[in-house]
Image (cartoon, rainbow, N blue to C red):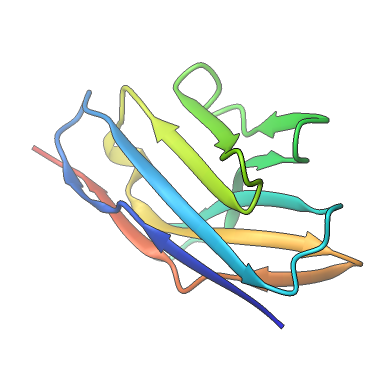
Length: 115
């Protein structure tokens, strides 16, 4: 079993920055893909960014150049540095881990961008 716990959400003004963290615990394999997804009210959950543990990263067009995904040294911690935040970034952000074709999700953390 795998557990994912996110932290770092909150309220921020437009143009501000936040950093999200996700700690993965349990039966974590060496080969996996971790990522961040978000879901705004009334919308479907969408990809924000994914990280294959040093092999590649992938970003949604809407966050390219503003958000940076990275892993900690231990590889079981995932970060999302969010800069130049916009009101349209407001959503619940979820941490995701995929290994052996199984998806695991965190409980989500709310990001609200508003003045």
